Length: 401
Image 1: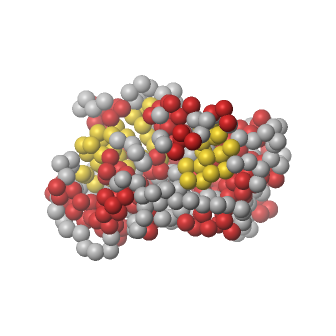
Image 2 (image 1 turned 120 degrees about the vertical axis):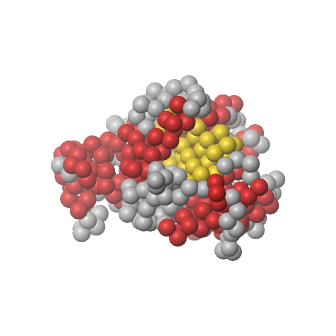
Image 3 (image 1 turned 45 degrees about the vertical axis):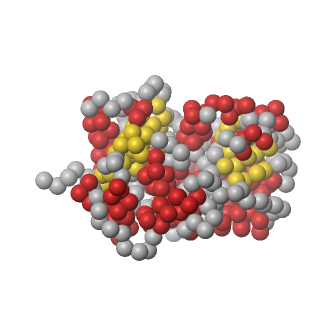
């Protein structure tokens, strides 16, 4: 909260966060931040809203809308896969079918969509590129927080904004911490290489040493003891759909046992295969929040929060369920930017989950993409909780009978 005190809402500072759920969580947990910022948003969301307000675009295309356009193009069950590939191309700056790789089947799908709508698909990435080339005259100041990675189009817009208005990018750094806490440095180096930026460093936070020690225990190269292993269950899912179904079933079981929904937190990878399936998987559950916020059902007081891995920082819950813990989603396009799929970021998210879980922590993953990582995770977390009063359960699938 101390950093926010240097801002005033009347000075038109906009707080830019990585995900829409993080925006909603910030309003939910810290309503007074409105005293310091005129608006709270994500970079893509701001670009889409500004494009509409300035007449650059009438209706930005979201991920779910893009899936529907792919379905209309006649690809059937493959619509999600094509949509996430097209979304990835847009984040990389390939905004038309002509710029997409010729050998990709998704290029033909994009061509059919462009022919149907009579032009380019105006995603948030399209809006960011359009604004970077023609910024409106009246711009807010931007304070960018909790961002570790920028996609090419996001970096392009941020550089353009930095030449026209005040922009502050603040990242978390822990002095002498393991590399997992310093993954933002390539982003900072890329910004400095193509812009006029100055930097300063905060003093280490009060928990810097404790966090570094926890990181080394959880993800260091040395062997970890198996203490606490009797409190671990390990299995594997064959697909994201099976994993989400099992997580939803676990949430229902907790609710049936009388656990209040507000005490249950579900964190999933901010990746298309999870985002585009989450609404169906959690249908019928009382939800307070479902990432991404756009298209989510009406919030229920005391409902379950379904958030992104990136939103785990500072979130405390009685029961925390973290899906997609294999860290490697090789079958998906390599997204940059606020999708934050980089496998190397997962340990940092799990540090937050382990530190903040009050009662039970459930971790799940999909078979075949990260077995070695998960085996080490089992050993490391088991060692960490040897003297931890709360049980930890690694849940990937129904336990074998």
